[in-house]
Image (cartoon, rainbow, N blue to C red; front, top):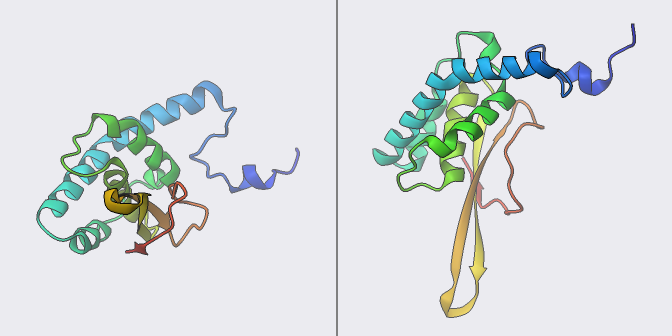
Amino acid sequence: MEPMSGEAHSRSRTEPGPGSGFGGWCSKVLFLVVILPAVLRARLRSGYWLRHGSLDRAIEELRTVRPFRWRFLHNPRWLAGAVNRLQPWLPRRGTGPCLLRSLMLLDLWARCELEPRLHLALRRTAEGAAAAAEGHAWVTSSVDRELGTSDQGYRETFSL
């Protein structure tokens, strides 16, 4: 038996490799079905706290959650994939897609006990009298440094 490479060794048992075929596909579909109620709850909670409090309060409330009961749900990369797949069908109501996605992942990753952090950034899109800015939000984990969503080239303004 060959020793495992560093990449294969670091992969969790619940995360099939790239060539896992039909079994890996079935695992992901099953994970998506099981995690759907948690994703919907994260969407509802993030929307509620954004409407009924400040962003600071929303983040505090989204981080103070009980962990998932089932250990196989503690798979942050698959959670991010599930949020990406389901997000187009979820209502947005006044928030940009990256902020909504980040707040949902903040809730879900907190349930994985990853100590997620929300990062916000602004970037000017035009100069002069027609100056405009666009924003971006992303999430990282202080427990797993390699885990995080994309900053898309934005320079962080602040993090919560």
